[in-house]
Length: 138
Image 1: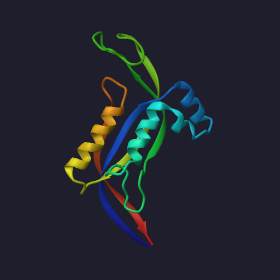
Image 2 (image 1 turned 120 degrees about the horizontal axis):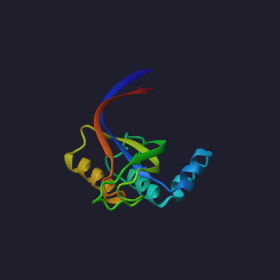
Image 3 (image 1 turned 90 degrees about the horizontal axis):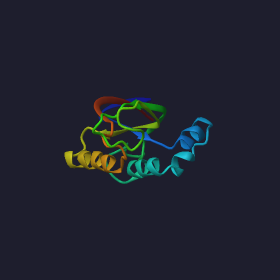
Image 4 (image 1 turned 180 degrees about the vertical axis):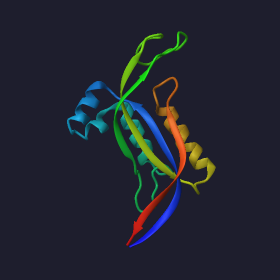
């Protein structure tokens, strides 16, 4: 087997989901991802043609993590969930994908802008970092 290394940008977005969605996912019902309106938008962005999740022969590549976010909105915030000044816990799916490092800047900007546009939070958490991937080639 050959191995090949490629540089990529890792993109992680923390996506709030309905409590019922998280409960269904924790129960093993993967289809709940498709039924959640916010997560469905994020998956559509991941699956659309473009640099995000593009591994050549595979498209829409991503990882899904389940959990909760916690935050306390400042007094001047207008939170989608909870109330200003109160600690909140949000059922969350962390969607991780990659953009090839050689992708044009416009493609990277377009992918990140689409994620920001679809995200319901006033201040979305989207992490971007550079990393190296090793793939086995047969």
